[in-house]
Length: 59
Image (cartoon, rainbow, N blue to C red; front, side):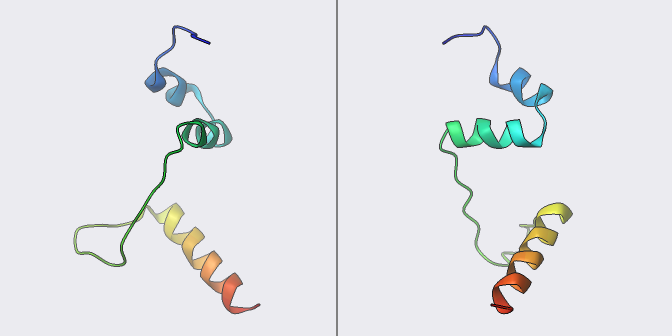
């Protein structure tokens, strides 16, 4: 169904969960390799990685 709204407009107006749904709808995937010079994760994502690693090591 067409809404007349661009993806950029939808992204700008969306909250975090809606953005997640937009990306899932596109079947978007993020692939990263560890510690390549010049690549970095935003602080929020880096914190999530650390939480995931800690949670994985405690099970």
